[in-house]
Length: 365
Image (cartoon, rainbow, N blue to C red):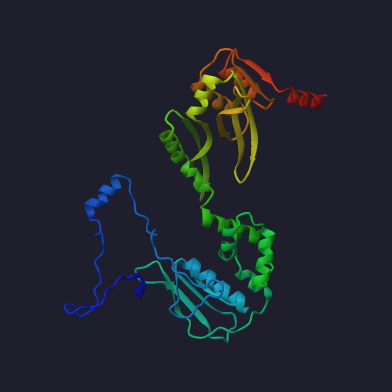
């Protein structure tokens, strides 16, 4: 079916037919599979599958056309119907098969695609007649342009400029396909395209412990502490629990040792709000070195500013630097910070920012 994926050599006098070389590695037997399971190694079925390329601007849906998966097949069909201004009705739409027909009852056009045998590739099996029936309404074309279709057609634009605006994508889609798509549909399509190119945002939380291991390996003596908590949620009426990220504390060895060895014991602590997709507080502890430059000691991410989160941050900081003599901690007047300093560093001189004190005083007056 796919001769381009098979390595062959010309026949010789000994062989009466083409020679197909054997696979480089034999399949694993039962003993090897059990050993892999004990070691925690699992093969990914989708990894290494052939990526079938096709003309995304002018896709073909004739019989025998092959796509990488059902998503590519659906996107190609949507592009074809949008460009030809056709209309279709979905009979079956499943992960393993896709069947559509013309919206006009008298039209005999019908297309059926499904997975190939013993493969994850998707192939058009039935499409005998050309589809030339026009669409009844413009709304049908908008229904065909779903968010996953938008993600597919704008992927190259997003890859060239990941900061491209949604308005610019709307204008480009209208110019190329004649569709004025809603703002939020293009917005979600752009987000899906970014996820396909760079990976999902939520997957980055799975790499936190990898980051911790790499930091401790590259800089022994550095500290990366990750705090998580159990979250309760309901699924189909049943209570379930999952472990979620809560806080992180990071301090490199050169930072905390440099503070103890060559900086004045005057520590400033502050926080700023994270306004991205995931909210929280970015906190940092820093000093001024001998050259009057800002010298970072530690930083972290907290879920919010309260006594509990600040106490956790200061406790991790105290485990590193201890309680230096004549230590002064300079903070603003944020919530929970003063109580956390008193609990973790008893007896330390605590100074607050006069600008924040004056602002809070003026609010009360």
